[in-house]
Structures are given as structure tokens and as C-alpha cells.
Length: 228
Image 1 (cartoon, one colour):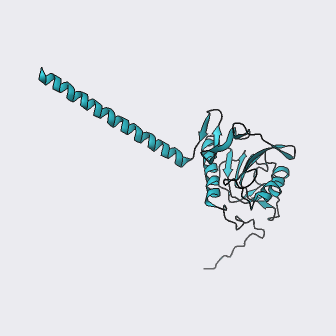
Image 2: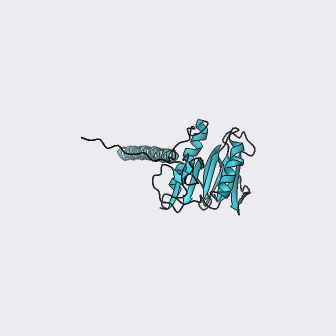
Image 3: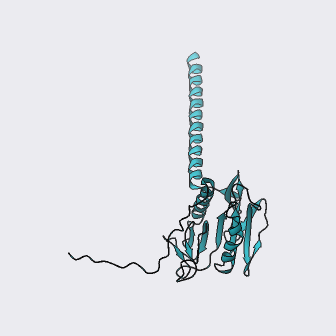
């Protein structure tokens, strides 16, 4: 049987830049948790796409023109699987980007990346966060005004992001999203499961105690009846 030899594309857009997902497990966890909470919050909206650590290409025909946001959100794009993000195939404007920073990345986060996000990708809201608090500022947010970023002031130690309808802040030392409508912090899937398990355990304990108390009352009633 004659073998058919296909041809590979002449222009390749790599799916990885060869760099690790994050510098430390703590940086990685911030990214994973943020994506998890955002996906859960927007799960009922079909055209909100959330991803992270994905190669994003912003000039067709030039694979060197790329960037890899730690976490990003795009409205107007369905929840589908993408291997890379190409702005000539997907919406060219991003709504939100989070960069989890460190002393070795902050210069790029505040300069080169900030320039690309503002002038090329037109990212409406940009947040930089250092979980170890080693850079200054370690937590800052911006909104796009024209082609420049304007710093968002903290409100109750949180950054309100209009594009998300949510606020970002530290809760018990961990970066979390806050829903101002419900006046509540939003938790990860794992945290919600743990909370549900704890609640079920507490309800079971309360039920056992109520049954034990009822049994005591029955026994007391039987003793009174037998003594008459």
C-alpha cells in the first residue's frame, strides 16, 4: 500500500514559549484559582472566554509577535478549546488581563507588556499582582483610557474592575474575586466542595444531637409513666 506523506505548514505558531507556567507553585496557584473562579462566575454566559498561560499572537505572518498573559478574559468569544490565540481569527481586543508578577518579571509587566496590552491588544483592564509582596506596588490595577492606562484606586482594599463586574483583593492572604452585588467573596471549586462537605457534616452532627436529645426525652417520659 502506497504511503501518503502530508506536508507540514510552512509557518508555525508554537503553542508554548518553552518557559514554565509560573515561577513558583504559589504563582501557579494564583493563576489556576483565578481562572477557576472566573469560569464558575461566568459559566451561564456563553460568549465569555477565560484562559491563561496561552500563546497569543497579534500579527499575522509573524510568530515572533506574541505574548502569553497569565490570565485573560475575552467577551464575544464562545467557550471553545483553543491551542493558541490569534487576534486575526479571534476578537482582537481583550477585556481583562492578570499578570502574576515577581522581582524578575515586574519590569516587563510594567513596561513591555503594558505597552502591548494598551496599544495593540487594547486590553480594557490590566492587573498586576505579586503574591509574595516583593515588588512595589505588589497589587495594582489599570483601566484603559485612550491608548494609556489610568490607575484604578483601591476601594475597601479591593480593586473594582467594571469589565468584570467584580473586585479583586486579598482574602485571608490569598488573591480572590469579590462580588459587590452579593457582598461576598467568590471561592474556588475545591473550596466550595469543602464548604459543602463541612456544612453537611455539621448538619449530620446537629441531627445526631437532636436524635440523642429526643431519645433522652423518650426515656424520661417512659420512667415517669412506669412510676405512676
